Image (cartoon, rainbow, N blue to C red; front, side, top):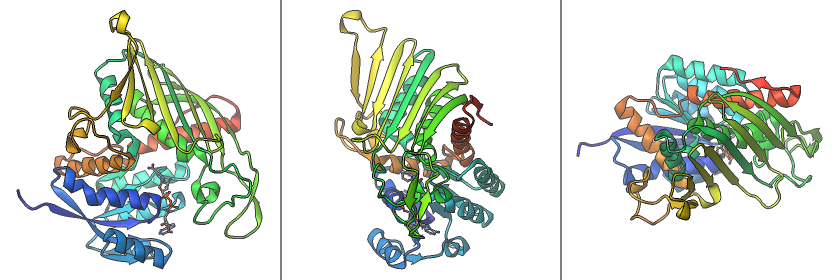
Length: 381
Ligand SMILES: NC(=O)c1ccc[n+]([C@@H]2O[C@H](COP(=O)([O-])OP(=O)(O)OC[C@H]3O[C@@H](n4cnc5c(N)ncnc54)[C@H](O)[C@@H]3O)[C@@H](O)[C@H]2O)c1
C-alpha cells in the first residue's frame, strides 16, 4: 500500500463538537480505507489551560488561543470550525481567503446574510468544504435515503420531525458565557431554529427534496435572564420553541417541532415519512433501528418491521464489527470524515457542501420570518 497523504488539521473549539471531530479524525483510518490521513496539527480555544489540556489529551501537536494563528500557518491544510455560531463567518472567510479547505459546524451563519458571505468566500477559494450535518451518516438514516431512492415508499405524502430537549426550563439559567451561549441571540443567531430544527431540516431535505413554503410559530417562554458576561438581567431574544408546517417541492406536507422545554426529553430526534406504498420512521434514542412498514407485504404478516441496521450490506456497517453489533452517535462523525477524505481522492464534493448546507439556513430564515409575520413565507433560493 502506498503511504497515505497527510491532511493537516487546525481545529477551532474544544468543546462538545471539538471532541466529536477529534475522535473522528483519529479513528477514521483505522476503520476506513482512505488515501489521506488526518494529522492533528493544532487546536485553538479561548482558554489557554483548556486548549493545552485538550491538545495533550487528543494528541494535537500545538495549541493557541487565537484562531488567526491556525489560518496563518502554511503547514495547516484544513481549518475545522467547532466554535460557537458567532465565530463561523469570520473564521471561515479568513480560512478560505488563505486557501485552506474548510469544515464548519452548523448552522453556517447566524443569519442568511452571514451564510451567503461564507458560501461566496469558500466558493471563490475553490477548496473542498463541508458542513457537519452528521445525522445523515447514521447508518439507519442513510438506509432511509437508500430505500427512498430505490422507490420503496412510492410517492411521499407526509414528513414529520421532532427534536425535543428540556435543559433550559429553569429561569435561573443564565444566558451567554461558555455554558449558555445558545441562549444569547447575539452569539447563536437564533434559538432552537438554528440549533435543533436545522438538523431536522437538513435530514428532511436530504431525504425528501427541497422545501418551498413554511408557516411557523415560535415562543420565548423565559423572557429575561441574567447575562453571564454582564451579570445584569437582560431580555432573551432567542426562540425557546418552534413549530412549523411546510410544503415540499414534491407537494408532500410536513410538520416540524423543536423545543428545549419538553420535560423528560434530553435529545429526542425523530422523523417519520409516509409514502404511497411504505412508511419509515427513526428515533435517535434507538439509532441502530429503522422502522419500516410495507403495504405490499402479504396481509397476514403485514406490519411494522424493526430493522436492526447492523448488517454488512447496510450503509457504512461493513467497516465496523460483525453483523448484529451496534455502533453509536460518534460513528456518524467518523463516517463524515471518511466521506470527506474519499471526496479528496474522487474529486466529487462531499455532501453537504457549504452551498448545500445554505439551503437549511434559508429554511430556518423563512421559519423565523413566518413566526414574525404570522403568514406563509416562501423559502429563498
Ligand atoms: N453537529 C451537531 O450535532 C452539533 C452538536 C452540537 C453543537 N454543534 C455546533 O457546533 C458548534 C460548537 O458547539 P459546541 O456544543 O461544541 O460548543 P461548546 O460550548 O461545547 O464549545 C465551544 C468551543 O469553542 C471555543 N471558542 C469560543 N469562542 C472562540 C473563539 N473566538 N476562538 C476560538 N475558540 C473559541 C470555546 O473555547 C470552546 O472550546 C456550534 O456551531 C454548534 O451549533 C453541532
